[in-house]
Length: 376
Ligand SMILES: Cc1ncc(COP(=O)(O)O)c(C=O)c1O
Image (cartoon, rainbow, N blue to C red):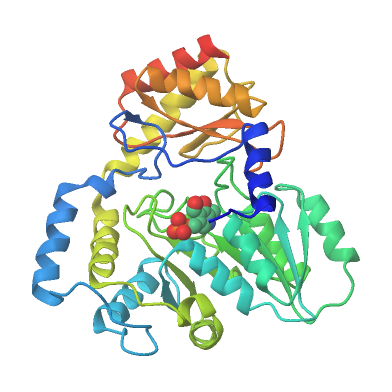
């Protein structure tokens, strides 16, 4: 059957711009690419515990339907209580992914007549949620609170105002100024929504995220925690007030019109949160992040790295062709890194995104950076 010519042209354009995507094959290279910051996705004890509990509590494959129909089990409800307690929130609602959580929350909560202000580098799931909502939206320059203030002052009347940020930005690895934003929420009368995808499991005394680390829970309207990154599982939760939960159960379409999370995933998140409380891997991860930064400074690479204290460290290498080439050179030395090309990031800001893990060795960290210094 013919493939539509306008779609064909779009694919050709991507090929011309060196931005055509394809699925990478599974590999056994040294991992500087995955979001498995603490190694939980491959933790044998966690794996065994989940299977043991699956046999005992839920020896079944699927959840059979939406949470509002046949798919609501005690396991889901118990996990939501555990999540709320873990993240110091009044209540929690599970979603099948962080993408679903952001789309569900942002498409249903802001109404016509409301205004959403969001950071220009926000994750696609935040943007897609905003695009589906009936509210008007305004983006502000990345982490630029002066510009946000100006936009808040000049935006005119709104029934309700929302500001959406990520605590750690997924493509830059830097942090949002959460304390200032929390105090601005009162001065400028907006509701603050914080996506904690990349701080879940990594920040906070037990991995309960940056909002808890900074003791800001009372100033935040909704927080999004995802379990596919440091927690090593899949799925996400929106935490906030019981009324927010009730509202989402009634209006968030990505929660309502989808099959509930299967028991295996529920038990994986349950046990991953328990493991987060006791793991030493967070300390190891912090040590590795420090070593990575110290080594890149020593090699004179600090000029190309975006300033970041998180597990995401990005070296800007402009042009899709160049960033792809250097990433392939690192792959050839058995290091798994991925080029982040435009249009995922703006043209000229293409980058190699290094994800640091608790299980990366000091020798590997030093070698990958040495290689990078010879390739750029
Ligand atoms: C900031 C941010 N929010 C949300 C998501 C989506 O989470 P999930 O992978 O669970 O769909 C991601 C994933 O890359 C992310 O980086």
